[in-house]
Amino acid sequence: MFIGEYQHAIDNKNRMIIPSKFREALGDSFVLTKGLDGCLYAYTAAEWKIMEDKLKSLPLTSKDARAFVRFFFSGANEIEVDKQGRALIPQNLMEYAGIEKEIVSIGVSTRIEIWSKAKWDEYNSSSIDLDGIAEKMSELGI
Image 1 (cartoon, one colour):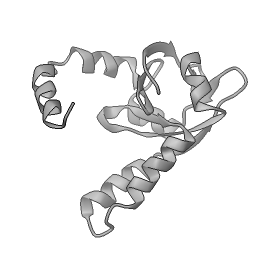
Image 2 (tube, helix red, strand yellow):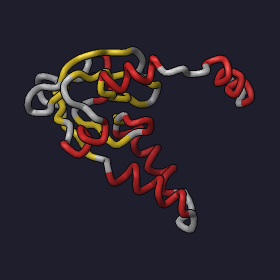
Image 3 (cartoon, rainbow, N blue to C red):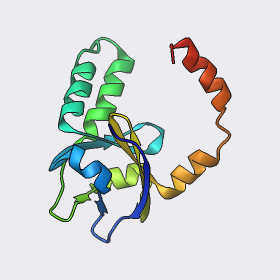
Image 4 (cartoon, rainbow, N blue to C red):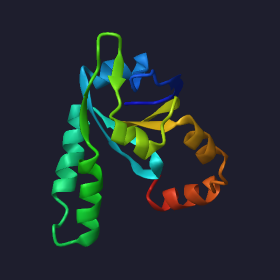
């Protein structure tokens, strides 16, 4: 399980340091893809397989399902972690997420989200209606 928030910088070769709390669970490689809300999602191989199976089960006849599957798979890359705990973020994903230098990695249970610090700060300062969201979550049994 991934939890916590970590701030760090991208080096001049587009490499990020994987926080040590995440490194062991991710292993030597992981899948990095475009996420929702303008961030990147990082999955362990096992969690990516679960996501892949769910996406493959969506009906091909559904236009929305096809678009959603394209979105996730087109941005997916298998990322290797080097001996120093660094991972290269592909340029297309850097551009998608608006990452320039400062990033924030957050643990979100089964995945890691990687945000540009500016987008993360903007997201956190927006007027999110947590009380309204909490009410909707209670309808889902949470």
